[in-house]
Length: 486
Image 1: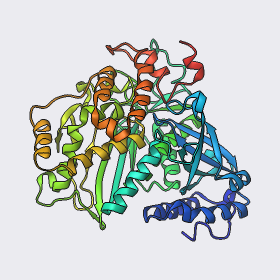
Image 2: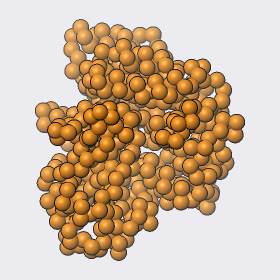
Image 3: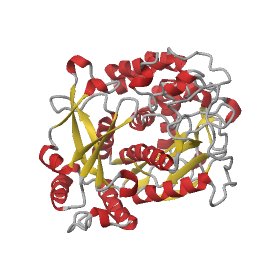
Image 4: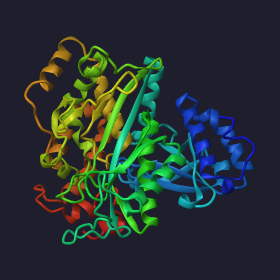
């Protein structure tokens, strides 16, 4: 960690390789449990001395997972980092206009050094948790709540939650084409190449190469990148890490993809099913629990090579599948992806081979044994989603006796399917005592209100064509101007 804040080298003169080294050092510090408080003084002193840093990009997410960023002049941040406020009423799902002021609590452990060619000259990035006016954690900020859950598991049980998401997306011709979407014209693929058929200088390959380069610089620890099955579809895989870091990386992944695509005159799209007759995009979420340096989801003699803890965790996830569905599939468009004609993971069951299963068990060993929740869409709020899935898994792990038998009896009998439309998912979510208990009734009510805003403006029967409303008023796409068109 000392190498991160050594004598300033001038950020603008650093190579991609040197920036990567710094980001990997920071990642190592986060994983080892070094707190933001320990890093705060070092980082603030570094800002004062490093002439190449001009601004700090502070990131936070709303209840739906949409990224919000504020650039603070570094000198201002050094003097006012403990008094950063914003208007919460301007963020969907946060405060009412009459009680609008909220605070940002900078997580100094989340520091990432940014390459200037993509993010602008002389910037570093940090995440912040949303705080209420009195400085307490804001109940609808699930980054903070995920951080608290993970810390609680680490301190009380010695458990680290590791997550590796596989995030798919599409590449379309033109810049910002989602905001001008027309259902008569649809989207235009950037290329017709796809799985195993993309040539080295193809548009999709050039996009993936640059995307992977920036991802590597930001410390993702890349593993594999490739075109996906559908034309112009992509997926870049990287090393698993602890849940909060993983959720942050989902947000950064989509930010990088969109910026790289924009610089190429293209649009990176993370709608779950932007083109009706092609495979949709998912965010398969691979999860395992670690204790004392060992993967406790591994069981050499267990079914699928899983331990009893892992099997009970799966039971919890399947038992609350319908309750979780609106969080894993948060948009009208999400339910097009659950079409069984396209390898849809819409069956509430577990399998090692059937890709129609909500939960799949990939081939693994002592290090890689994991549970893959395939139902998650790429437009899900990663903080809220990981929080809910981990909570559901824990409900199964902690269940005993008759409670566990009742859970197993429900999920390992006749196979049922997940909801086929968002209205049904909303109804099941509203009735869920588990969601009200885990998320809190206020957060549940706010989340439902946001989901209804779009659902009420979209036909319940999805039909065979992607509609204007499900794209233009999607939570990651819409803006004040678009909503004013109603």
